Length: 548
Figure 1 (cartoon, rainbow, N blue to C red):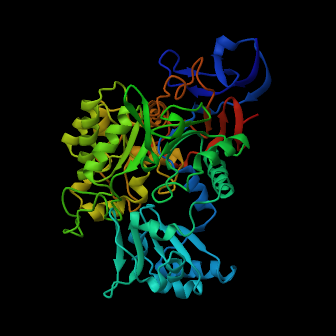
Figure 2 (spheres, rainbow, N blue to C red; figure 1 turned 180 degrees about the horizontal axis):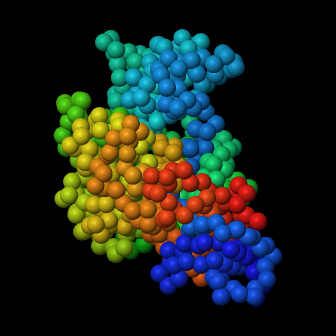
Figure 3 (tube, rainbow, N blue to C red; figure 1 turned 135 degrees about the vertical axis):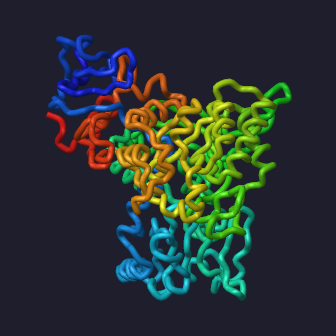
């Protein structure tokens, strides 16, 4: 038999119970056709010598904002590593402004007030930017700060007249003037001045995100929210931009996109008195192919822990009168989720606070009671703070939790400050979820946290914050469980476990070549591992010198 590609002398961890390890793998048409003796004597168009390197199934990030990650790579970097203080942030804005015209926008992202002391203000940004319009996005994506000129571009001269919005918050001075900080839905009051984003710019962002992701061994991901510029996404041309990126070869990572729930609408009668709720042409979850497909519909029910906007049952440790808030009315959520469920959609609801988790589970239970549907695989994105009762309830309803391991180190200290040490023990309960019988995917929420799966796996196993503080250490999982989450678990979350996540005959030929054995190294060293090569469809999309 003649193959398209043959990969030899590897140490494959297949995650296939029938053949847990292998040394040789053959590919035809992007699929694995055999391993070891099954491809003995075969010739191939391309033969790659792995030189004894460890190989695992390609990483699948179940929740990564690829286009946003790419967009941030093209913007001013405001992460604490780049701007460790508020003064450094203003200096970075000043430096960027020096190279721009007087009316050009300055975009930056990644700052965290927990690490630099406080949020920037419009007044200080005005001075740093020389009066230019500025929009700085918080690391969480749940808030941002605008300059006075940015407010003016959006129709609010002098930062006056900025309205309150349901599901959002505008920080104000004593006279009602906006300070600059906009939370949750209120961000759109300013972002509408520069969105929807042109398709060319979206494609460029997708390409940048893809180019970064393949260096990290990512072969599949789910983009959690497109098409709703006022919530998540660049605008109504998002799907077109992803399609273009695939056609132009700019997007190699297999991508599942989640249309934001607010873009779904009533499509009218479809016969026998029935009506349909969804996207035009009747598109819904599952439409597409293994390169690009429509997945769940996404809805964000609350905010973030480090922004103190996640909807909690009790007040925050440092803000006892604040329990956060829902972005949408609970009854609207129940009704809309039920309609989407009835019409065949998989649903992915962002819920970080424990009160928001109950609202979502109530809605899922109501939807299934009204329209029973087996194997819907609805999801709760983050499932960040949850009691034992909520863990059990999630599993009983066969809902998939999608937590983020990398949050532990990157924003864990802020989460402990927000919740207090006792309640922080209920954060990102990966071990409890597995013990209760949940299917656990792996995800990063990049660019909120770093998107490299090896870093996420490190934190799932080690559970230490940037300050070295253990965060719910009883919730640590083993390296094998973390690898399974980032492969088989994530595939299951997108109804793709029959073709992704394992290295076996008939599966997609997607895998990552590592610098060392993930399952054998000291667990404290996992974050030092690197990706030597990434293969998608049997084609090498990244090679850092690992292949002969």
